[in-house]
Amino acid sequence: MSGPRSILAFGELLWDLLPGGAATLGGAPFNFAYRVKEQGDRARIVSRLGRDDYGRRAAERLAALGMSDACVQWDDRRPTGTVIVSLDGAGQPDYVIVPDVAYDRVEATDAVLTEAARADCICFGTLIQRTAGARAALRAILDAAPATAVRLLDINLRKDCHSPESIAASLEEATILKLNETEAAALAGLFDLPDRSIPAFCAEMIGRWDLTHCVVTLGACGAFADGAETGPVYEPGYRVAMVDPLGSGDAFVAAFICRLLRGEPLGTCLHHGNVLGAIVATQAGATEPIDSEVREAFTASHHERLVEPSLKTFMNG
Image (cartoon, rainbow, N blue to C red):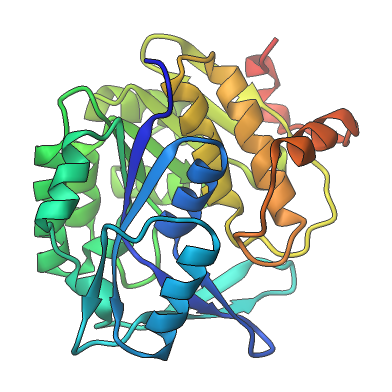
């Protein structure tokens, strides 16, 4: 596979209402698509905005970031999505996600299906599937995609926005599962896995759901992945001065999948995901620009590596 890849991100485009009153455009699929574009691949966000001030401002922000709005729809009845974000004492976010908003009514339009038909990767999560209409749109998009397209489930379990049925249905559609360690523990409980260590979890998920890869992010301690053909690998993380974690996981998966689609080794994909995720954590908001020079400077600065002891035997190299 040569040249830029075409990656479609399906889901929520919304405003994160931050502590102190600031608002930043977000939503995991949007953050992911922006970071994909930033790395030189072709990214499209499939979502829906309300015809209100937040919708107008979102369209302006997309244009300012140089992102296409070809697959962004407009809703005359429902407002643009918003999320009330709070941070706990450790700086970890909690979310109140407003229901019945524009992106809940996203459709598989002709323009969207045309993009799906040439996609190298479709990325989706569970939040967008909280309505029957959005679930049907996702199925249509996945059906329109080439058989060779990667189906990346960045599961993003949010309170009151998923069910056991939607999780199982999503796993049936996916070829790659990405999640954090809290979500891995939740799925291990849901599926009653006897061995809930991260390596055992990944191996079980690959076998049970016929995945090519399962990837678990571990915050500052990096990420672990298993591949059906390559086996497991662990990449430690970096100690950084965190400003906020918004968009860090989305940046990780964008860098990871862009490298994986180019056929780079699994450990290399994890490394680049860790670097981009760590840089985003040092910034306010999820979409501050990061160019190749910033990534190279970060790598050259020799940040302290943070290792999860239970995974040392799987370390890359």
